[in-house]
Each structure stands twice: as structure tokens, then as C-alpha cells.
Length: 308
Image (tube, rainbow, N blue to C red):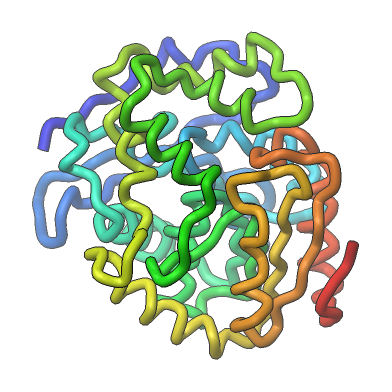
């Protein structure tokens, strides 16, 4: 596997990003001596229970820059990881190098094997949920609760939304693929040019974008998909997950509209929180408000099914 590494100078002077980079290594395949470097930030009191922030497509941990400071100020440890292929993590050069199973294995090794996180509150968005919720199903006793934001765990049994199908076509066929422009299209608020550039920073040219291009194609669309059986097994575990679970979904996201309902129907403690005035990338539109939702979730462990 040929790995690309975005030069450090691409990440200089990013607006609103004062956090020091940290790195760990994950095997590129089970049992392989070859490794890929994974970037993460680790802020707040080291002894506090961790809040694990997982981003999705085509972003990186920069997405959570408005969420991290309020959580650390409240005394929480915050760990934000960059998926392999994104941010400051290494990037396999070929689309064929990326599979759903590989993404889960890479993050499982990082979160469980290296960081050895426990008593985790998972905050997951987009593909961060597709991967993060699989981690919950693998080791539910390591998790204290979950905030699932504009995400899902598709098995291929339900028809995808038209918005998702359009996005899938765009990712694979568009002549240009600019992460900053994509984030801007998925927000309600105006995204400044410097912030767009920060989302483009991990991808100096098209050779770095294999992971971002292929991600939508890895979402199971039929029960026969290679990942579908693992998804069904994950749901079987989540159906017995009795820790607090919040489905925090935006009111202006056409891609994941209605995606909270499978969580509410199948996970015993799941409840709903509608984030008003936010698009798909709610961290950009309502970052401080989302941080407050997370803080309240951790501190109050509410049991009511629905808040609006």
C-alpha cells in the first residue's frame, strides 16, 4: 500500500485551530508490520473521562474547533481523531485501498489498542458515525454514552435518500472535488474563504483525495453489500445498548433527514434532539450550541425521549 502524507506546512496558521498535533500508528492490515500514521488531538484533563469526537466526509478534526474549547473548559478530556485518508492522517493512494472494514479496523486499533480509551462519550458525525457506532458494537462496555449527529448505520435494507444518491454521484464523477466547497454547500451560514481553505489543506492535489472520493461508495446500499452483515450484527448489539444515546439531527440537512428514527426505534435509551438552523455540518452552523448539548448530555444523563 502506497501512503501519502500531507506536508506539515499545509496546516500552518489555520483559523481557530491552536491545538498541537499528536500521532499514533495503526497496521495497514491485520498482522501487517506496515503502519499508517493517524493524527489526533488530545485536550483537557488527562484523567477525565474522554469525549471522543469523530468526523466524517470530507472533513477532519478541524470540524470540531468550536466544540473542543467549551468541553475542555467544562473539565472534559477531548480526543478528536482524523480518519485514515483525511486531515493529518496518512492517505492510502488508491481508492481500492479503502474498505469499510479497514476503516473500522484502523480506528479500533487507534481508540482501543493504542489510546485504550474507556468510559467514552462518543460524538460522531456523518462517516464518523458509520465507523464510531461499529466501535460501540465491538466494545459497548468501553462507552458511557453516544451523541450521533447527522449520521446512521445503514444495512442496505432501506432505500437511500435522493440527496445521498446525488452526493454519491458527485463524489465519484465530479471533475473537481474541493472539500471546502463541499462543506460550504452543507452549511446554512456563510463559510469564510480561510475556513474553506482549512478544509482543503489536507488535499494539496487530487492524488491525496482517493479516500474522500470513494467514501460514499462504501455505504451499503443492498443487503448483499460486503459490509451489510457486519452492520446487521452491529445493530443487534446496539439494540441492547442501555447507556444514554442522543440522536442530534439538524432541521436543514437533506442528506440525513429522518435518520434519527432508526435509532429511536431500536436503541432502548435513545432520544432525539433537533438542532435548529443547521445544515449537514452542524458543527459549523451551531458549534457552540452543539458543545452545550454535549455538555448537558454528559452532565444530566437525560432519559426523556424527545427534546426540541
